[in-house]
Structure formats: structure tokens, C-alpha cells
Image (cartoon, rainbow over all chains, first blue to last red; front, side):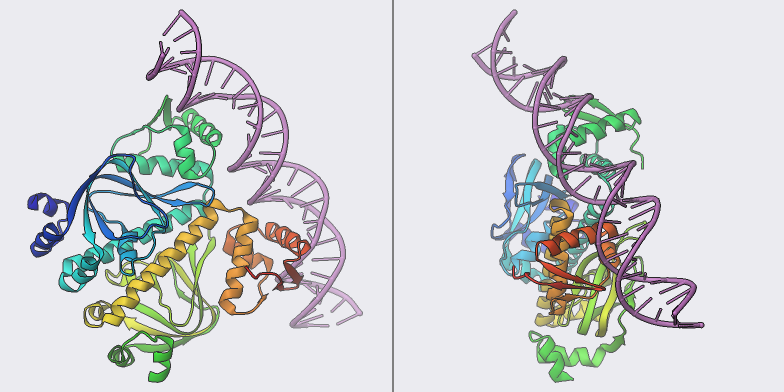
Length: 211
Length: 211
DNA sequence: TTAGGTCTGTGATAAATGTTACTGTAGAAT
DNA sequence: ATTCTACAGTAACATTTATCACAGACCTAA
């Protein structure tokens, strides 16, 4: 286990890894599990060991707007930010591929900041990269039209899963972009005509996404 | 001066305040100054002592999308996040009301995190509140239509300036919402008919904004 | 006063997106 | 095989937003 933690978080010092193993608790969750809901109080910082998580912003009307993915070696920035004051979560986290996570009680998160340089740097880097990712999300919805956003969405999905097939229904995609299924269907059809994708049932093959 | 810094940043310890005064440099900028451009390297962390700054996300086509305001007692989260690694700025900062800022060299920002508990807490709280603010921006553009976004924009402006007059042209508002002047004019006209505002040249009076 | 600029209002039109309604197809369940 | 359901395609239409065109109001500078 020590070996694998070190592999996933190569920048952590050995003492930090030992401390994490001593104090953290390893937990598994199945795909589909909601790890965190908007408005819930946060009690742990979450490190992703294995699997994938999607982070959503929820609208009042029940929309689930996709913000970004969390992958092994990453951590939930919101959980880090909020733990300090045990604030409510501003986002919703859903497991999309069976995960193993390391749960770290909030008091330790704060304590380690002072004791472990590598933890401090990890936290700062997590803040930075998540902030940038959210800024990119703002770019997309503020400056781009739906067809560009759809392309970006598909590209990001393929980056995250490391494959060129998207196994999602048009409805699921529409929900995560906060638009309607018909719009997604139409735009995908146009992309197929442009030779960018091949459409099958419950699957979209990405063809020329070598941006 | 010590007195006034303590007033603006009440949570800072006395030692921290003394250290800031010793190492920081106080600078004034006129309204209209661009304090930071997208892509510039960041060399300082910026604390706002007096005045107001607007933070924008710039689009490739020259759009200037308003993210949030910075006010006395606050700091630029981006400058804090980026200084650690001397990264490029992802945003543009414009002075909208003559400011006095305290510039803090990036090495100190990092050093103080370990030495001053009140600085550490301030930085974490800055991250948290800015992150939340950006999430609210995402909400607006992802879930709301232009008329709601315009109302929110006006409300935020009046909150920031503490008055109920918005001295901006329709064109300026349109730019910051990334829409066109005509749309803003029309929506404002409708709001006037609903009794929410009174329209004058270069000025919008907010009437029933007691949300 | 006149000329030129900026700001605002508004109609006409275009384009993008959202909504409704209906169809057919594939696969699962019976 | 039949039925049921989720999924996908698409036409028709509504709404929202963007663009183009133009006119009048106001301000400033000559």
C-alpha cells in the first residue's frame, strides 16, 4: 500500500505518506454514488486513489452542470477549502467509475499544512489547478456557443477516460451542459456530417479529435 | 498607518502587521489602470487597502467578462495562487475607483504561511470566498437568462459602490456581460416599465432592489 | 451656433437555442 | 412473439439573443 500511495502522489514525503496511512481511512464507492451533495457539511478531505469522480454545480431547478473531473492523484479542492471552517459544500460530487478514496478528517488537513511541506504544496497546487479549471468553464459558457461547448465536452470526456468512445446518452450529455436532448442530437448529427464523430446507440465514437 | 492596516485587516496579528509594513510596498493607482493582464507573470501578492478593482476573464475575441470585485480588506486570490510557482495570470484586473494597494513579494507570501497563523487563515479564506464567487458566476451564466443576469449585475454593482446609482453606459454593461448594447438597452427598458429602475443618460437609478 | 461625437431607443431581421410533438428503432422483459 | 421502455431523429414552432440600420438626444469643442 505504501508503495501505491507513493506512486499516486509522488510528491508526498515519506513521513506524510506514513501519516496518511495511519490517520486516513480508505473507502470504496460504486459508480453512481453521490459522494457529496450541495449544502451538506463537509467533514473530510478526499484524496482520489482510484477511479473517477465528476464535480457538478446544481441549479435551483435541478440542473446538474458539469464542472470538472477528479482523477487518481487529485483531491477535492472544495473539501479542502471548506473543511477549514466546516462549511457547506457548494457542489455535488458523483462517482462515475468505481473509486477508492482516502478520507482525511478535517482537523488533520489543517495540522499537516504546518507540519508537512509536501502537503502544503499539494494543497496550494490543488487550489490553483481547480481554480483554473473553473475559469476555463466560465470561458466556455461565457464566450462559446453550444456546438463548441459540446466539442469541448466530448474532448474532455475522452481525455478523462483515455479512450475515444463516449458511452453516454444524448440526454445525459444535455443535462451536463444544461441544454436539451434535441439540441445535443442536432449538433451531434452535424458533427457526424463533418466527419468528427460516428453515432451509435448509447455511444459516440470520436474520430478526428487530435486537437 | 499601523492603525489603519489593523482596521482594514482586523484578523491580522500585530506581528504580521508589523512584518507587512516592513516588507510590503504601498502603491497608488488611478481608476482605469490595468493592474494585471492575462498572461503576465505575477510577482506580487496584492492586498487592497482603499478603492475598488474589478477582475475580468478575457475572451480570445477581446471580450471582458466581469468575474467579481475586490474591495478593501480583500486580496487577489489569483495572485496568491500563482505566486507560489510564479505562474501566468489567468485574469485581468482593472482599477475602477482609485486604489491604494500593498504589494507583497511572492517569496514572503509563502514564508508567512508557515510563520503567521493569521496570514494562513486569511489566505485560505481568500481562496474559499473567491472560489465561491466564481461558482456563483458559473450559476448565472449556466442557469440564468440575460434579464436575470442583468439584474444580478446591477445589484452587485450597487452592493460594491454602496449606492443606488450605476454610472455606466449600456455599452460598458454589455461588454462586461458579454452581450450587445441593444440587448442591454431593451432589457433595461423593460425593467424601467416594471418599475425596477429609472433610466438617465449615463446613469441607472435602482429603485426596488431590496432583495 | 454648428459640427461631431457618444449615448440611447427601436424596428427589422437573422441566428441560436428551447419546446412540443411525433416517429422509428433497439433491446429488455414478459 | 408481443409489449414495454429508453433512445435517437426530426419537423414545426416559440423564444431568446445577436446583428444591422437608423434616428433622435445630449454634450463638447470649435
